[in-house]
Image (cartoon, rainbow, N blue to C red; front, side, top):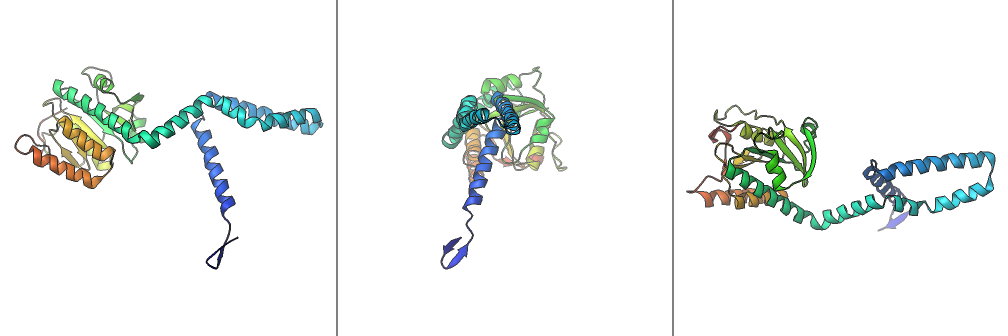
Length: 286
């Protein structure tokens, strides 16, 4: 029991310790469930349980002592067997804590480069960047991938005639996890008949999730960003980078709205970079 300000509370430290140990062990087992080391540990555990049963049944003191020595060294054995997995786990943990912002900025740079190159060649593209809401149902029905987000890879996927150029790609973290993704089209009826399929799909996924969708028009070569039922059209590379940074690095919706408004004001008279409703979107882009 713990006394505080005259009140007595139950000591929950043992419960906290058990919970912490549970999550640590569960996390390690879940992370390494498909690794070679996991199969080895499973085999060793099965052998030890079997030997303990035989030793207890036949009362073999020498083997019992040997098993106790092996059990006391089991932690060292686990670290040796799981050395590659543990090294990768700690590397990813350190990368997530210290370098997450840097990795996202590197990914944004690759996205801007890819979109700018494809826009210059008028190569149509549809890129969905997953945020808090998972799009696993769409991923399950698509072609699975596991590639780092790099401009050459994105450009090769959307190259005309390439096997995966139809549909969208989905990015989770800094990895391309699916291609040839069929996105739901917008359910909005008050929409321009000139709105292309890619833009309709980008608007549709923004109605169902908080994803950020990039569209490169095959007809005009313009770059658009769809988020929360709005398009931000005719973006330059620098404007696209600013919008992506506010959404993916800072994750600040208010700052994103201010940035988009500022871009629209700066672009007035040269090109339309502000958010526009779907019914004013022009140009057919299949």
